[in-house]
Image (cartoon, rainbow, N blue to C red; front, top):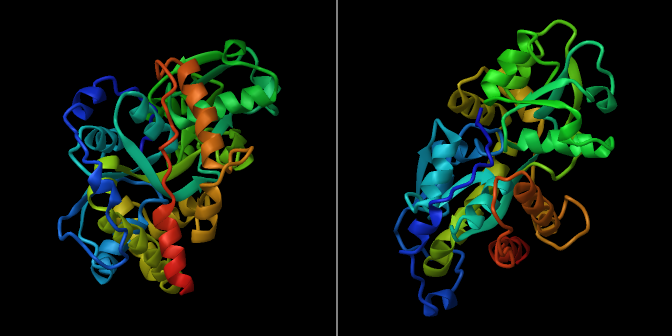
Amino acid sequence: MKIRKLLPLFAIFLASLVVTVSCASSQQSTSLNASSGIPIRLGFSTWPGWLPLQVAQVESVFEKNKSNIDLRWFDGYLDSINALAFNKIDANSQTLNDTISAVASGSDQVVILVNDNSTGNDKIIVREGINSIADLKGKKVSAEPGTVDHFLLLLGLEKAGLTQADIQFQPLETGKAAAAFLAGQVDAVGVFAPFTTKALLRPGSKELFSSREFPGAISDHISVSRQLIEKRPQDVQALVNSWFDTLDYIRNHPEKSCEIMAERAGVSVAEYKDYDAGTKIFSLTENLKAFEPGNDMSSLPYAAEKLSKFLVKSGINQKEPDMSRLFDARFLKAYAASRNS
């Protein structure tokens, strides 16, 4: 599964300097049918919320929507983030946290839809004898610094009135963190699927809490370059249309779709179904609601502000970026209007 990192991209601004956007192009129509004929280079990697894109390609959903997609698979999730940041691709499947980090470093990106929320696939797993978050005080706890699982750990500590200073934080790459926990070298670990499965092989280990307890804290999206939106809005619209049509296809052909996604992920169908259960795929209605202002993590604008502060406090970002243009729901609204017409 993908390594969902929140790494700073300090050099991104160098790439963004060469991008110039015409004011006139922003006035183009978001036609539901027209296409420029130029492929959208769309990146994705192994995470249940993004694997429907593989179904869209295999079952020709993109073609049916006249969406010219050059779907690009990345074995390394970080590579896909860098590819979008340096304009090697036009769009990418990535976490909200990573999009904020990219924007803070100078990349002009826009979130156009929510793929999913993690609802259990990210976990804090503990050894026998640890039964509450308060029990973590003074214990050795490992997670990959700056990852969404590090963020989840801090949210849990905050809920219990603790901070990272109250534990012995052991910074390790996610796979190594899971291995260290399995070997008994640390008392607790923050990991995502499938590393959760590995960590739980330790006798007596158990889940202390997961992303299920923090709705909206770990969200995944399709982010695109602003240049793509302003120069080729009709192609962005076709991509959005294809995403929701793919979800319809999956609902109507669940077993076939699961086989396609499991194969792309490199796991068995049974394993994929377990991972999929910890991911909440967002419907059109849930997407529209998520883009609205709110006062909890279910609202993207609210979540972005909280995450941005976390990224600065953690030293991942040097400053909070301007996020006033980070979210663009016009393509969702246009698709919704087409469904209701």
